[in-house]
Length: 177
Image 1 (cartoon, rainbow, N blue to C red):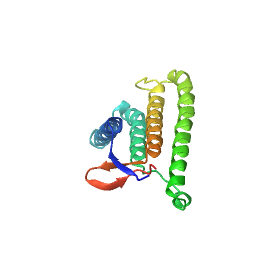
Image 2: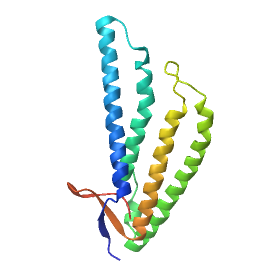
Image 3: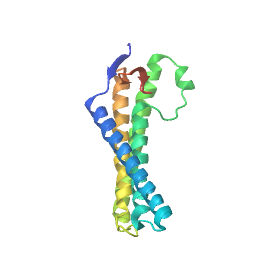
Image 4: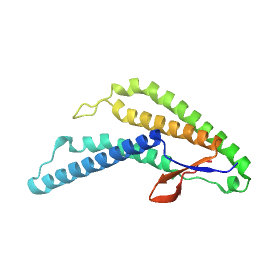
């Protein structure tokens, strides 16, 4: 069976769009806050008390958005020399099994993180009193998105499909199938 090259579907486009927005917004906000706080320190010898806390709260969102985007593009580290040494049919079966296993492992992590939300919700940041669950929610959301992407990759491997990620980069394909 020949591999069919397809475009991103609506779910993938939505994930890429949302994660890109989160990545850009958190990066800009962190940069502006840290720059303003540094300028205040040097200019007036004072600083915003909350200026250290907000970047700490936003940084996990920035990281998780980047991890999900890397996952969608197939840009994570992979060892493929063994998979590349087998035929197309075996490679397809390995992809289906491995992507399904990845999705199941994310499901386990999602369940564990969900159970921790209640525990960390009572913890509060010192100045803004933001619940600790805010940063754990970003991890939970990221794992849900990566589980969905892994299931989609298994589905695509089953149907012998490969994704072209950017119309500007026709050769950019995920490690799917």
